Length: 198
Image: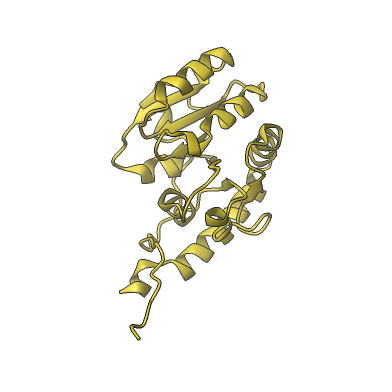
């Protein structure tokens, strides 16, 4: 018999505190310094259900809150049209590929992964390792990393109202969100530090 070893995705242990939120994204997007950012990093494809996040943003009246979608993919035009139809096109930003995603994570008040199916997401691992608060859909790959109210927040796939409520809750209680993010960071760096897999 040949022994089988499962090697999980891993992240580098970046022992660096988060920089001040909004330090880079306002300049990148030409927005006011008091702008608040939520976002996602990954392929713009149907299984990511980013249309749900755009709809959730439309439920939130605070125009300082902006959604940043980092990446590219076949749904870009559809998502741009959705932002227009939801009257939030000025608050939804498509950056395309960004080499230094750490600067994105450092500027986000909440990272959202709304997928209907997903393995263990590298972008979620990286966001948590960077100390970014996270909210994710309740699918197996996400729940391996995020426990609701312990290392982040979780929501049912496709539940737009729940996503909107979590966004509102997390942004209105930053100290609580940061406390969860700290626990998430510790969990990821303790269990998914790539140095452990060498």
